[in-house]
Amino acid sequence: SGPRALIVDATILMPDRDAGSLRMFNLIKVLQRMGFAVTFIPSDLSNPKDYVETLQQAGIQVACSPHVESVESFLQAFGAEFELCIVSRPDTAEKNLDLVKLLCPNSLVLYDTVDVHFLRRERELRLTGVAQSEESIKKQELRAVHRADGAIAVSEFDRGKLLEKVPNAQIHVVSLIHEARPQETPFSDRDGILFIGGFQHGPNTDAVLWFLTDIFPIVRSWIPDLRFHIIGTNPPDEIRDRACDHIIVEGFVEDVEEQFASRRLSIAPLRYGSGVKGKINQSMAYGLPCVATPAAAEGMDLKWGSEIMVAETAHEFAEAVAKLYENQELWTMLARNSVASIERSYSAPVAEEGLGKILKHYGRHLPKSRT
Image 1 (spheres, helix red, strand yellow):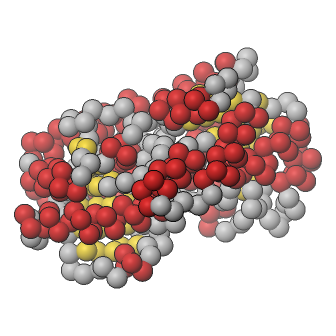
Image 2: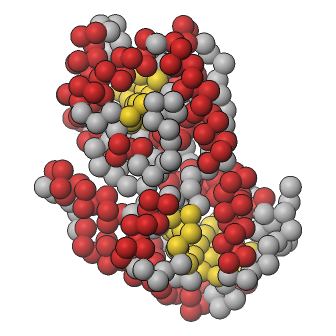
Image 3: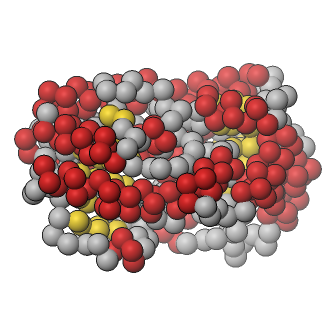
């Protein structure tokens, strides 16, 4: 019942494994709360049973193999039924955006950027000298922004970067979505520091290796018993090989809440990237203070020093970690302000307001909310 929305993404959502999936899963829940009946189709038609069931149990219709032969055949059969279509990520848009526009004639078609991929690739190239086809991804991304009825960026910073390249584009902001879930564990009962992030994402591997090589030895010279917990899918051998009594490579953790309730702080030592970082938002939602680089905190509109600690060089980062780890008054302030920041800027009601403004902008009627 209600108006129908279609989400086209690269692959099946895995909300417990990567921040992009978690954001889209939460975005779908906001659309449902607004009154939409949501269908999700992965561009690769993948159908891992557990994750398909996760979506179905959340009331999301999933169109995938073996029941669907192709995105095109699905759109030919059902495209006219949708009033809103969101196509996510540049490679997905390259394959499917024109099909969606052609075969969903009654729909507002939005391109969801997730982050500015070409900006991340350009920064990677400057830092490492190697980046995967940044020019081709740039063409895909800007073509999608131009071809869609409108685009969704995750921050005003990203919106500005895209408008520099496509000045007349309609670009709106709907950021990451998190529920504030502050944990009760007091400062004195916590220990260790935490990194969370999937290692299929290159910036995460680079960040952890930089921290292990250039930063963690400095911190341990000041706090010898400090332990570093590394959480995330598919850690490469170069990280696994560093495991020891004070470097714990946890790998994939099904329920991360215990980690956020047990550790004293999280880190985001990213040296390149773009978009709003889910690892920071997730940590702040649990009330776990975070130390980040400027690259990691970019576009988040956070107050440095009171909502997040930000440091750029290895020595500055080590100093910030040690200071936050040992200063209970500072820790308590950041823990409290982290949760308030999530509620102010990254909650479901904020996303719902943003999506409502987008629909009104295009003269679309808002569905009757289910709340």
